[in-house]
Length: 119
Image (cartoon, rainbow, N blue to C red; front, side):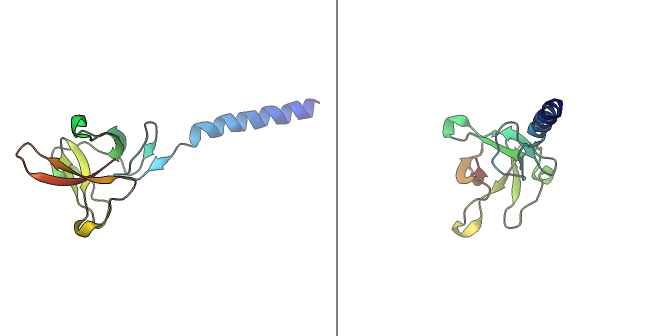
């Protein structure tokens, strides 16, 4: 009986420890959920694009002042700084955005059209 209780206690302890370490880790510019980990120094943050225009959701990204601050991680996708946050631009030629994001058109303060991959 004591051996059985000891095994059950050990199993419960292992399960409890495992629950704290089994969190999902997403790649840069991937859509994420609050509490997910993000790779390569990025963090899961809400979009800084206008929610009133339908831009909502979280992605693994970093803050920025210029495009040079953005991690250029993905081939075929250029990362740019928009509204103090890094996003990747939609691919040319009608390809789709990676990592659970979609291509949406954003208009900057100067009226320029920018196609961004956003969650």
